[in-house]
Image: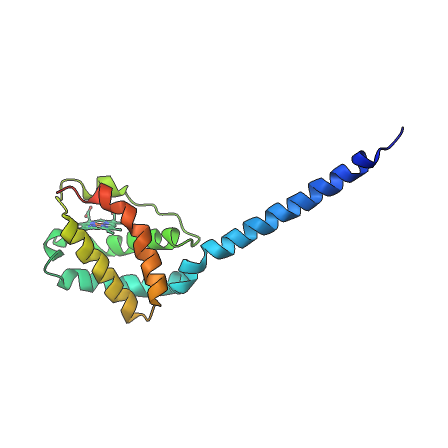
Length: 149
Ligand code: HEM
């Protein structure tokens, strides 16, 4: 059988493009991970959420909404959500944002108040403002399903 140059080359092309693909994927993983790492990974996110909850409860602009809320569950769900959103190795297991906030009549002002409280919690944990802004930007698309008033 005659072996053509192309036939010899084909597996090399396949293998090298596979490597290129893998290293691009690895690079994307590292890049997508940056906000998660900037937040201090899982333990950093837990600390931020632990500071965030009492700030929410002390904030008169929004605390009435949380009077019957299981704050332990809320904390666990927020930690999962922030981990996933920031590119960490988590899968959010809570309710869809629309479902979780329906009938609450959340206003834009309340939405921004909560985002501000999150920034205070991140500031308290010395998270660089570039990282803070990136997490807040990831929450922005949730305004639509959450704000219903
Ligand atoms: C960026 C904005 C917000 C995010 C990312 C967010 C995220 C979440 C998450 C992850 C949950 C847990 C859902 C579950 O239990 O499965 C939740 C529940 C809740 N959220 Fe929000 N939320 C936001 C804004 C707000 C605002 C502005 C209010 C009211 C002022 C609010 C009030 C509540 C309440 C009361 C619950 C508990 C509902 C229940 O007990 O079932 N949220 N939120």
